[in-house]
Length: 241
Image (cartoon, rainbow, N blue to C red; front, side, top):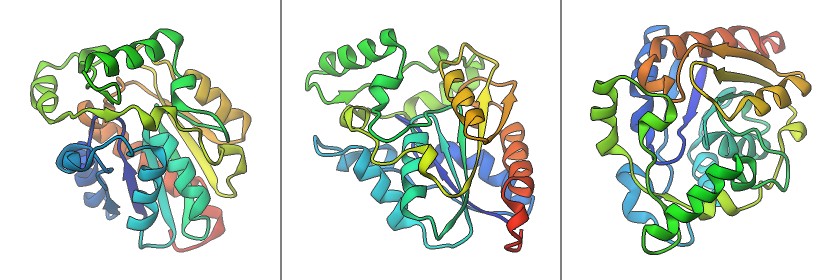
């Protein structure tokens, strides 16, 4: 059995992992999917102070198990890498799904393509307060399934711009645990550079034929990949997988 801690990306909440969690539980794994401060059902706690550090602390404080597999999707890669750095004694491996793989001092806004970074800043300004990024349309993330778009769009909430502006306190190359990267190659992903970075660090890298929202559009595919990585990457340490 593997203990998965699943960290969502921008605009989402722990709800987005529901189908993946169901698949993993059927395979005998334990899962936790915290909602980060200021998002989804915790949207009422969003304010100007909410940032990357807030979200790192959410995961660190909420992770009670040892021998954890920490998974970060999209922006959640920023959170997962830094949470793993602070919980080295609790984390067995880190998996980033089509997301950021930061090094120390890098901010997510600077890791985006220039056009996307400019859009995020402009969108936050257009929101009227300058510190919240409104949700991106799921179609912009490669989603073509109209039912998924209709079901998920009302659940998306604004994301704090500060979390994209804060520099990463730690970096992937500093981690002492094993890592793996899942690149969603079924859409025009801007994250391929991080798959290449992961490969350069000796991480296992695999491509999934899915869009950025693979956890919603192909949960069986993603759950199978996560379970397979848990059975292979870092399993040689013999801690009861």
